[in-house]
Structures are given as structure tokens and as C-alpha cells.
Image 1 (cartoon, rainbow, N blue to C red):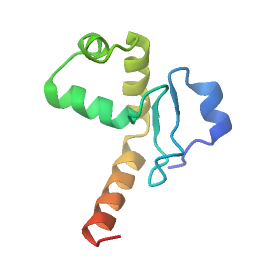
Image 2: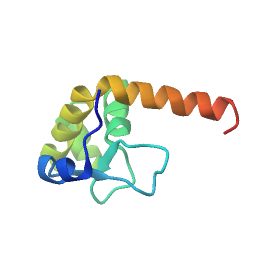
Image 3: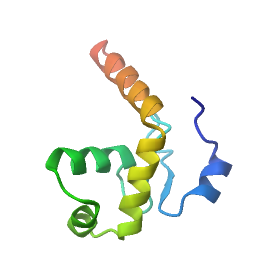
Length: 94
């Protein structure tokens, strides 16, 4: 599964952007926030909140939460693989 290039990301997403300060990940995060889309979606799912409730909780436009959910669902396989690789690296002390 291919990771979208920066050029594709800029034209494809309105509320998500690359997070170059997070060198360990290629995942997109919410614009203007230090939060990955996958983290927002994980918290939303774990707490049983709706997109509307999550948008209100975080002071985000509803469209930003919906876009994060769509992005995570479309890229779930490689996001999961990347998270597992990072976890293995942390367990090995890297």
C-alpha cells in the first residue's frame, strides 16, 4: 500500500497535513494541531463519541473530524503497520 506524496496530500485534504516534526511517522495530522489523524480517530472510537461530539470536544470543524475518519479508514492497513513497527522499535530501545 503506497503512502501518498506531499503533492497529493496538499490537493487531496483540506484539514490534514504532513507533520515533519514527527520524524517517526508518515501519517497526516490535523492542521494547526499537534495531533495525528489516527490519534483523533482512536480517541473518538475508544470513547464512543460521534464525529459531531468529537468536533465539539476539540473545537474542530466537523469537516475536519470527518476528513480524519475518512483518511484513517482509507489508510488503515499501512497506519496499523507503521504503528506496529514504531512499537517494536520502542520495545527494542531504538
